[in-house]
Amino acid sequence: MRDNPNENLIACELKLLQKSYYIINKEIKDDLENCIHFLNSINESENETNIQNITVIFPSLKKLYQEVKGLNRLIKINEDLYNSDKNDSQQIIDNKIECINKLQEELTDTKNTLMETEEKCNKLINEKQKVLKELENTTSQVEILEENINKKKEDLKEFLSEHNTLVNLYNTVVEEEKKKYKMLEQDYNFLRNIQMEYQVRIFK
Image (cartoon, rainbow, N blue to C red; front, side, top):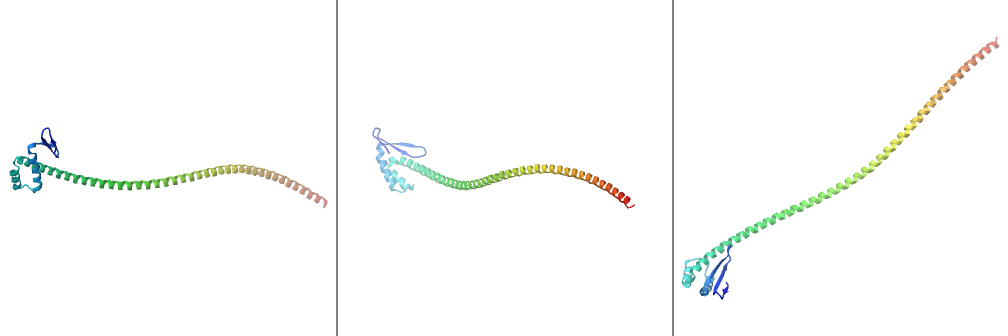
């Protein structure tokens, strides 16, 4: 309520979905206050006795009372709707909180899985680096072995060349010795024949 001294009016604001303002004459202000006290003292049920009592005691407020009761119904309906919406909203909020908690759990599980996967990947990377290092060492050793083998091949080739040279030289020497032996054998046979002829001549 608000008292305007200039117009001698009272403005009452009722909080509904759409705000409604009622202008009440100054002359019924006291009756309205008495009506409010009376309404607070009686039961809220809408029986004829209460309505009749109000009409008898405050005849000038009969129409206002009917409007107030109608507005009370609207207020009650709006309060019920508000409470219903509030309950629904709370349920929706609870559901969303539950969904968020589930999502948080899933995210935590996913994070843990990703961390495990990352750890495994790091292990695999380390193993790969180790294998690559070993492969590099092995490759280096293989290259050294190949180099040694090639060197051995060259040495063997050189040795075979020298061997062939020696074999050829040996064969040449053998041939020369055979020739010498054959000549010596011929000389021996010749000398022997001469000796035999000489002996025959002597013993004749």
